[in-house]
Image 1 (tube, rainbow, N blue to C red):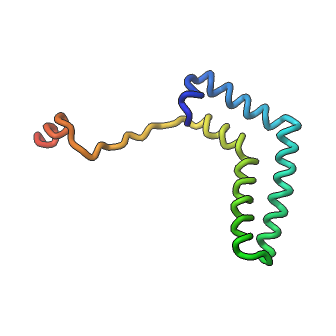
Image 2 (cartoon, rainbow, N blue to C red):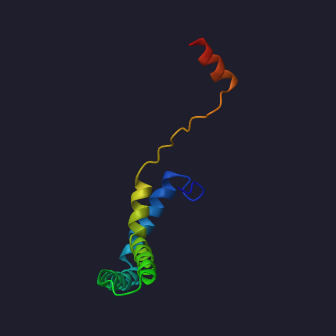
Image 3 (tube, rainbow, N blue to C red):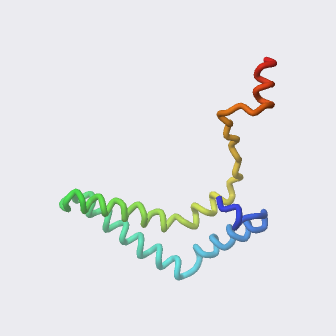
Length: 105
């Protein structure tokens, strides 16, 4: 997640509120309606299977992108509401301290 944009809990709450209100705007709802129609059309064309394979690959890519765009606010709302746990990546090399520790064991 972009730590520069969401430095505080207040920033995160503000972003969630913005994404939630975005979903309610007439403009966003129109975009979703337009993309849903495109998704339905592409799905039918893909299932029909009459287009050349290369064209079907392009339609699948477009379908994936359209679905991602439609789900963008929900994706970010979920991601921002999920606490991010930092996974410690083990260093493959010993430091002086870890080498000394491993030799004591």
